[in-house]
Length: 546
Image (tube, rainbow, N blue to C red; front, side, top):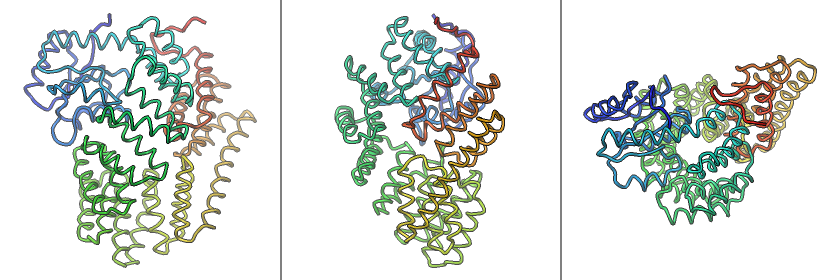
């Protein structure tokens, strides 16, 4: 049985009376390391400052966000590690249905009213399970996914009560290492024993990764028909339809999901962007206005939302509304790194719509002066910046943005959509020339690093490839080779924890950008072999018998 002694707790609760009750209960069961956050934003700030073993969160957190959305943000933005438990406290009797439809579910949930003994029993159960999974989570954290899979296979026998959970983690690990077929096999194995929504979604995701969009869509359509609250299924279904060129149908799916869960900013953003693509400026305006409003309550607000709102307003000729949106962007988000760039782009779009080319050019040149923030822009807004530059006789600046997009293109879709932007302006030859130049640049950077490694200059190889990764932070091929240079240095010069940590970060970034990248498996195995060679293990976790 896991010990509850020394557990650090963050209670996220907006009501003072309930905070006082929870403090009394936690103290009565021996938990003294307790801190409080009265809102989701305060919780995020506390969690960025330190780690906690346990988060106790009220489902209702006031305006703009509930506890489930907070959990999803914390996990998706990697603000809390896997071994931090998240337990929901709620008076909602239908929360079981809510959590059954959430891919990122809490470790447990407790219905009100609750007693100290109920709380102690449920915490004990959650920490007993945590103890079983802790070795796997620690191995994942240090980058040894191969060993984490092996641990899961072994632990299934030791903890048969968690069999399905270990199978799920194995499937997720295989997917992360690029073993798509193995992950698919595991999801199908799980589904043979129980019809689990998350396993069906996992299988659909593997089919999507393999570009089998029609098969994935069939799975997702059936899943939604049986459980209309499984919102992650809507998001993946929309992406399948976008890949098949059915943008209108994708918009309908996202709209249906947004009606069921109106507080998810990413989903609302997607809906606004699809409406803009389809020329439905009125829907885009109302949606993006809601995103901007809700964003004021979130630590994950984005100045790009204002730009999209300006676009929708200008499409309808609402120049005064657009001016007000730009003023609000300047007033409320000036501290965000890319806010000045977004303001400059918005201003350029406004002046261009009004036919004031000199002022549009001035705004675009201001955007160019903030080019250091351009790397943080989404591909879609970078492409809007390209259009604005070429439409306002700033071809050199437009070319530079195109080069930035292609240097960091994570997939062929990004390359093709950028080609289409230039093609629409009669610039096919320029597109071809830029692509050739970037391909040669990437090849040259990687070749230089490889040559240094072959010559035994492992320090030089690391310096070369890390410089390339800083220059092209969104290019999976460059990120992979930078990670490889770091691991080759460790292989030949000895263990270096800083280099290992950098390699883990680069591999994870490449995986997020390109989950089907063909060399993920090889580099995962290489990392594992180095950890084994140097006997690097998480503290307190013994080596498996050979």
